[in-house]
Length: 622
Image (cartoon, rainbow, N blue to C red):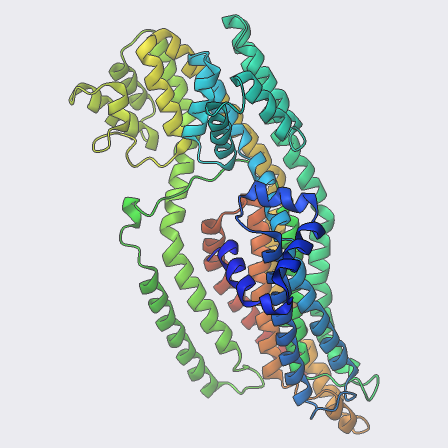
């Protein structure tokens, strides 16, 4: 259910909050900024300002009620004596203020956030869309048809804007293609100066001679690729401070505080610390703050190169059953729980906290479900990436053969032999078979719905370029060959930029993953061992045992391990999301596959370090 549907339903249910709805509509229209109105238009949300404001008020009210519910639970641990613990009072104030304000802010600002995200992500579509335009123009210098080709072949959000631009031209909003390009360049110029420059270069190239035209078109591609690379370099340089804050705020300081809680309970008689406050602070408040901060970081990440969508109709996904995978994962989680209960028969709870079993079961369920569900998608995505990496060289070999005037069937079979062992060679071999044995023309040999060699090639980049080849061969083999060789050069440029961006971000994302999946579980396990030692030492001191027992309330080692274990699992989800978002963008497939791969290893590491730390520090206790 998307934001629009929820917003409309919520607005109807919360009309009673504002009294006269017509007056509220008028007031809402006057109070919102022009940026807000522009954001609604840009995102295409069919909503009125009053509906979003009503939804934000209702969300804040629900968040306030939820925070009161948590406050009551905390108070019940202190028999509703509000002055029993300063720490509990602080947590209650934070909950009561933070939840409603966050709900109000998130809902009311969502259209602006969505519009900004769409604009930033559209910048990543520029290399693909501009490449299609330039490639077409090298075969046929008709700028209107080039724009139509790019709008049709690309599934990106920028291509949707191109389709709207062409429609506006059809209904005479723009007098000519030159006027339309000028409008489009100015519209996107404030977001991307290099797109504006590239569009003006393309427009001027059409009016130049053949040799000069190709030089200008090449320059437009260079401008786009340099701009994209520069944009991602700037983003990566700005990530140093945010990641340092997340590392400090999410890992080092919170886990260091864990060992201090027993000692803090001795500071004042009113500084009682209960497990419920620690749970709320570590497993609700802190993850929420990290989530919104990570969301803010990723919202500023410009998309680089769009991911290839994988349709459910793909042959390798036909047997995929998510419900079945969930049931299998659930059964495996119960089996792990049973094994954990058997362990408890042989180890005392002071050494092997029973709460670890819950963490094992959860990690087992998530891991098995994620791997069984997303491994097929990951395999397909990797195959597409491998084929696209091979395609640049393959296209060069193919183009050189066609440029020599060889017929298409001979060029394809030659390229398939030259590239033997690669995935793209099989596609070329099938194309040659269709041309020779089935007597198809080039377009049918590639794109026939039943026998086409590209039937199960789900790369928009490969399919678009092969369409250009099929169109070019109709006019001239030599001209098509020359154009394909130049297109191969463009592809290599694109791949080099992609690679350099990956390398620029790789060090940062590998550090984040290592922190989430290895360092955080180790630090948490050692800290829990230290906490256990401090607690037992304090309670073992005759002069302070009664005092410490009174203040460090409800903190059994078993509960403490569970709360910190849940926090470590949340850190794994959050930091891997940040790493994946920086590295891949909005790639749910890669993210869920990584979670399935890393989560069980991290939980096992946390378990081993926690048990060894407890044993080690117990041997040191007096």
